[in-house]
Image (cartoon, rainbow, N blue to C red; front, side, top):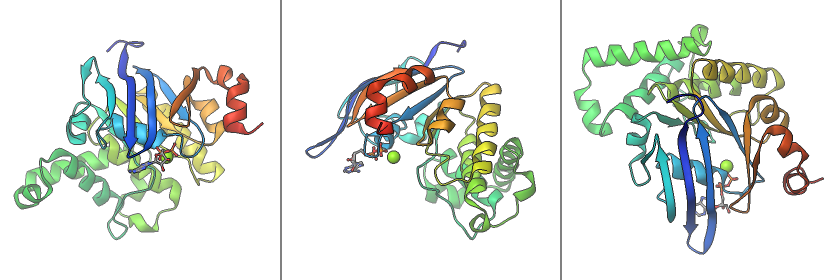
Length: 253
Ligand code: ADP
Ligand code: MG
């Protein structure tokens, strides 16, 4: 789609866990070429929103549209296949496998209808293709030197980059990142921000949950603020930073 066209539309989305309303009537958009931040205190409903958008959880109400078509109710694999990919808040990897193997395995699980069927039928050609693609994505984010290191031996920064490489294997138009900078050292955050800017440069849109305000302010075009499951405010980083409601809810000042 042209820059500025809505890629993702979240419309009056609601999620209830028993008596708890985790996400309540939340609406926002991500347009092509944008980096959007999703912020808010712990428990605000950010990860749940990601789970609703990526098809990990079923909506209680509302709609999710991708390139104009409804995708709520579709399995997450199908949503990923259409170009919407994500990472999880906690690193998911097999520490005893190499970086390259972890990324190739991710592409493999995403590309197949079922894990068991896939394992039985994995052809040599298909295996070669998956490893080539994994290598390409790892080179793309600057990890060419670490292909054969054991994933478990990496520092947290490179582990997060590895997760991004895995999410890139489906060639997404929009990447959802759940707290990619959490726990990273300053230099690792800088490296991550550079990679995310590069991906945007290459035409990708990004939606990221993040706690580090400096990181969000410097990287995003627009910010959506959630509190207690609802959308508190949406605006430019400058508008959000200046908002008394946000300062009270999120910054505690
Ligand atoms: P955030 O990512 O903003 O910290 P979450 O989306 O993880 O917040 O959680 C929002 C609320 O929903 C929290 O109160 C959390 O305990 C609750 N919650 C999240 N996932 C589940 C679940 N699977 N079952 C029950 N409650 C959940
Ligand atoms: Mg979360």
